[in-house]
Amino acid sequence: MRHLKLSILIFTMAAFVIGCKNQKNEKVDLAVNDPAKIYVKGTIEAELTAPPFVPAPVGDRVAKKLLVNMEILEKEGTMADGVQYVYWTFGGSVPGSFIRTRIGDEVEFTLSNHPDNKLPHNIDLHAVTGPGGGATSSFVAPGHKKTFSFKTLNPGLYVYHCATAPVGMHIANGMYGLILVEPQGGLPKVDKEYYIMQGDFYTKGENGERGLQAFDMRKAIDEDADYVVFNGKVGALTGDNAITANVGETVRLYVGNGGPNLTSSFHVIGEIFDNVHVEGGDLINTNVQTTSIPAGGAAIVDFKVDVPGTFILVDHAIFRAFNKGALGMLKVKGKENKQLYSGIKQEGIYNPEGATIQTMPDDKKIKTPKKQNKTLAQKISDGKQVYTKTCFACHQANGEGIANAFPPLANSDYLNADVKRAISIVLNGKTGEITVNGKKYNSVMTRQTLTDEEVADVMTYIYNSWNNKKTNVSISTVQLVKNGH
Image (cartoon, rainbow, N blue to C red; front, side, top):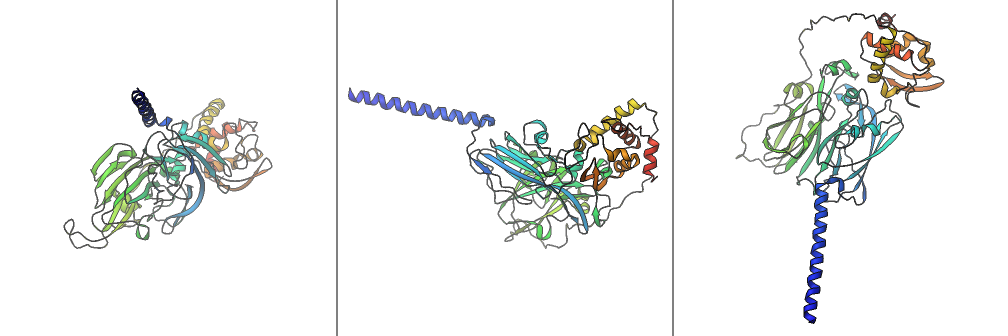
C-alpha cells in the first residue's frame, strides 16, 4: 500500500511539472506570436554607431527596456573635394547613428536638438507602430529635448528620418538613418557587418563647384540631383575609407536609401549576393546580382568573399556611380584562388570618372503666370493654405512662433514696420540676429520657393491675422521687391 501511495504521489508531481512546463511553453509561444506581449526584463542603454560601423549583434538576449539618446546637430562638412555643405544630422553623421534592437524591446527614445542649431526637427522611425512613427511626439526646438516610447513589433531593417516641414528639405540635408529590429535569437552570425546608406543631394552650384554650397529647393523638386552618394559624401567608402574583409569571410551589408527622391539599384561589382532580405523584411531572395532599394527603404545583403581584390559598390544607375559619387569599395585580402578566378589585374578599372557633366541646351521658355483678380477674402483663404504647408512648423498655428527659437508673426512690430522687408525675407531667406517685440532671435529663415501670387496671398493672410496691420499685399508689390525696388 505504501508503494502504491508513493507511486501515485510521484505520478501526480510529474504530471504537475509537465503541466507547468507546457503552460510556460504556451506563454512563450503566445509571446512569440504576439510581440506586444513579450516580457521586458531589465534596462540597457543603446549602443549607437556612426557609419560604416554597426553595434554588436543582440544575440539571444531577452527583450529589455532600451534607452536611446540621440542629438541633432547642424554642422558644416565636406561633400566632395573643395565642396562644403551644411548637413542636418542625427548624431553628427550622415546617415545618422545606427540603432540596433530586437523584437519585443521597449524603446525609450530621447531626441535632443543642440542649442546652437537654427531649426526645429523631429524623427519618424519606420519601425514604430504609432502616429507619425514618433514624429508627432518628437518635434523639438533648439536647446530642448523630447522623450517618447514604443515597442518593437516587427523584425526588419527600417529607415528613420526627420519629418519636420518642409520634410523633403530636412531629408535632403542628411536627416536619415537605419534602425534594425532583430528577430528572437538574433540574425545568423557573419564575420563582418557594415552600414551603408545612399542619399541624393541638391546644391546651388553644379557638381564639383567649389566652396560652401547651399541647398537648392528647385532642383530637389525637379529631382535633379547634383550628388548621389553613399554615407553623405563623395569618397566616404573609397581609398583609406574602404570597408574591408578577408578571403573566406561572410560580409553583411545593411543598406538603406534616405532619398529623398531616387531609387537605388544596389550592386557590388564582382560579387553575387547569397541572400537578400528584400526591402529589409522576412522575404529572402538568393543569388541576386542587383537589388532595388526605394527611397525610404532598406535591404540586408549577405555574401561570402572567395577571392582577394577591390570590389566596387555602386548604384547601377551608372552615371550616379561614376559621375555623381555613388561608389564605394570593399577591399578583400587573402590568398588567390586561380580555380575560381584567374587573369592579369589591371589597375584603374572602375575608378570614379570625375564631376564633368554634359547638359543639353535649355530652350524652354519661362511662362509668366497670369495675374488673377481675387477678393481679399479669397487671398486670405488661399494664403492660409500656403501658410499651413510652408510656415506652420516654425511659426505655429496662431503665429506665436517658438520661444527662444523662432520669432512670432502675431502682432509683430518687426513685421508691421516694413512690408517690403518682410516680402524680401520670404523671397530670399534671412540669417542673423533680429529683434521682435523687444526679444532677440538668431535663427534661419529659409528661402521659400513660391510663386509671386503665393507670396502675395500668404503675406496678405499673415497681415490680416493676429492683430497685424491688415495690409493687402499685391502681386505687383512682390515683383517690385523681387526686382530690387
